[in-house]
Image (cartoon, rainbow, N blue to C red; front, side, top):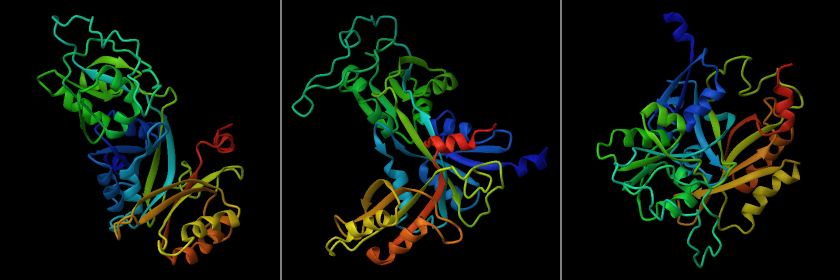
Length: 351
């Protein structure tokens, strides 16, 4: 049995257990062949992969409601060169449904608070004259709640509910939604709440004060699978990296980062144009401060296709052409199977 455990693949994820990253990892890797190891921060996941203490890492990358996870963007760009070997080799999508977790208030609280019985309408402002109403109502009285814990992304995904029913309540950011539940469960005052998952409520013995409080019904988070590029990936059985068993219909995505000379007219336009010139479709672009000069940026681009190992293909041609407009200041961050593509789903589904 000890030998079997040593042979299992280790996977790092953003903990504690019951986090959405944990759930994404559970849905991605075979539990019989892997050991999932919780980490306290996204930085710790990158460090675990870089040091080879784990084979893979699972990190949140972007949310359909609240956009990119900037911590992950910064670590992928890696301005301080701490994670030079890390590449992306896969992705996972997860529908995210948030709950407000905590303890039920003392009996003298009566569930007739105007805030709790509201129809979910939000106060109009000059910037948002017609705000969308909250999708959910509280299940319990919330007047005893003095502070809310959660991850910054979760706060952003539940703004309608929070501004309708919990306006003025202090918000405290923590490393993950499951950490928020852990903190609230340990709070003897019983006056705090967490935005987290129903699974976290079960694990930590918390009550559901509200359910489905996310702003968007189709709230989805995309996670990236990381590996160390000088480590040999496991053979067939996964679709990470370059798996020859995948169908020719399988679609891929790739990621790269680059800098341009901000004093050179049209430098950014020229860098982006090389992809169109070689028939490569760009699907997203993010910018982050370069930390070299104020208002200078590093650009992170995602595009269709994969980098062929033999140097052939449109992606390789585009990346080669990227050398000139970036003055060689670019790096490739990996190719992986596009999980959103219908062609990929069809080609990877067992008969």
